Length: 242
Image (tube, rainbow, N blue to C red; front, side):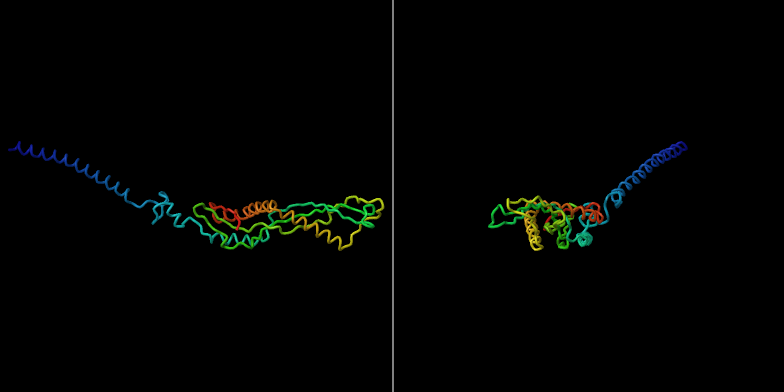
């Protein structure tokens, strides 16, 4: 009987050791399982996952306008800059034109007539009136991160004649023509007006206006691009005509 109890006690002790190992294994498994479940279900850190509460992806956030910019944010700065640059000079085009002054002599005969060639110099100014820009001319393409600005076409604003640079060539005379050609104030004004009219027609050619439009796009871009990137560094501007 005594041997039986000894064997029983030893058996219980051995079972205790086995149960201890089993319990430890179960405990470790439970801890690992709980940790994995927690990692799978816990909220992700927005700074790490690129998300914010209520948004599944960064793209959703952008589409909701969190990091996008509305047209209104650009309108005030663009319109303010436009007011500073009304009648913006976009191109200057020098031009030269020669004409002939004739004084017909007695009976309109060549031998009594006198002629003198005169060369006029002027500068044509092409401008864009930015005061015509309104809020309706400013659009924003969120997908392309682009501000679209519509401007009027360039116009020939003025032709400025440089009277001081007029060049007079030597006069040509008929055999019996004497003296210089002298113009009255009225004749001088008429001659200058005719020169300006002729220059205006040349400067208004299709090719000249196309060149002015190209410069208009470039000049307005150079002015507006820096203020657009000041509002949002990842946005840019494109300039088109109304």
